[in-house]
Image (cartoon, rainbow, N blue to C red; front, side, top):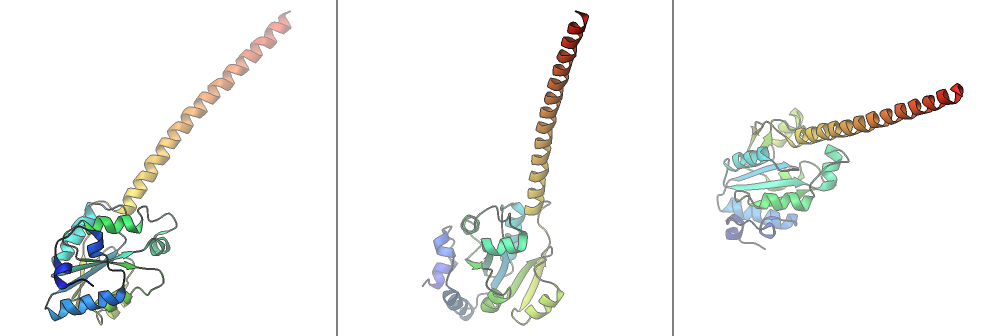
Length: 209
């Protein structure tokens, strides 16, 4: 069991930040509240971590003393984003997040739990969400006010997103494939024309004899 000092120190080690046991998390929340710390919670996938993620999390951390980040498991990510996601494993994603000193606690969100469960347990002073999130609609927002003191919606922090990056990679990959196919087709067509010409030339020579 970690002490309050352990939770608050600026470490970059995943073993110091990742809390797998929800009972331990509940104890930490009680310690933090009893000590007067303002708790901030945000949640997400954080796949193919980019500058927008970093800026978003940095701003989220300014809304309180302690930042807790719920990270979607690989299975939960597939259920939300499709069978080809995530590109980075859960272990890799939380290791990157652990390198950010303003993140204090990292928790897994899994497919077998309700999307309110972590919020209910943490009961944050501030719940931070992206304005682009589709996971929580207007009815969800109304319901969540019962489990947190305030909700902040942050704007997108970069001109890119993981989805946009994936789309660009797909487009570039398709373009390169098309160019290769076109080159192969052109080469194949040229070879066919050459063979036809040689065949016709041979028939012409035979008929002249």
